[in-house]
Length: 388
Image 1 (cartoon, helix red, strand yellow):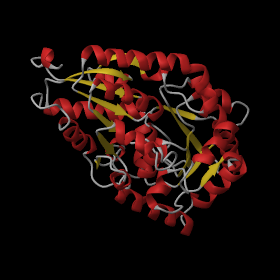
Image 2 (tube, rainbow, N blue to C red):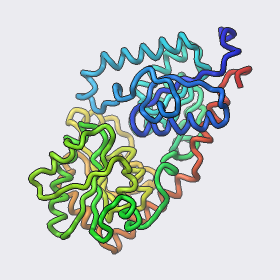
Image 3 (cartoon, rainbow, N blue to C red):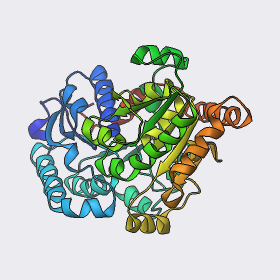
């Protein structure tokens, strides 16, 4: 079946979701190219994969939606893209597929790839240990190699009979090296001596709508107590400036918007308020006190509560195995509570020291840099004999 393209360079299908998935996938492609310059890549992703020379058949933004209420209207298009990728795989016969994150989409695609005889490497494990443990059986059937980025995932998968390898966390090398708040403020052109609060409301429009108003209200309270407070918001490429600034109108707080560079914004802060997600791990690695917040539509929340199998939602607390940072979810996420938790860790003292100690411990658990390199080695092992 593969003879017709044995003389061509090996082809790899790469399918990643938005923002962080695109970044992780692009670093993995770069590491693969460094080892095998002859490899060719096609699939779905964002700007970073495109910059690595991957031929994008579809844009990741089309499938990156969160929550049941937001997903439903997009289902026809999502299914169309799934079909399109499966057809491209049938036609081009990739030697291996790398699926990154977005489990609802990628596990359906893995089923189609399995039927075509394409080996599947999965990078950035879906958090099935937290949500849907039954899914491990599906993964065992469809995934040839699970590349884990959290240390406790490897054992979880191996016990279930899945071929898994902990490659390290790519986030460790994606955040800047530790430095003082003053140094980060200088880099970002912020006032060096002003008290600084970072607000990270997320990279999806639904998150901005649900989370930012309460964050603004909390910032308003804190700025009344701290003259000269600068409130800094990193702007995700997916969000319009107006969407952020309009939500500050009438609050008396003028935000400073920084294009991207979320970890540096946290590094520049005295404390941060961060929407639950990948950003929490990045923020935690910057070693600044933070408060995790999240709210989803009620239906998504109740379905989630029924399925959630872990004590915490933030990766910082999951990695530490205890409550290092506060998590204000759903009804607990109020301006009062946010302001109260920020106050608790703003100034030097036992609560702040304890949190920083926990963050340092969590950083230690993630191990060394070089995740993309180790992941690349694992992917190359899946190339069929004669294609290595």
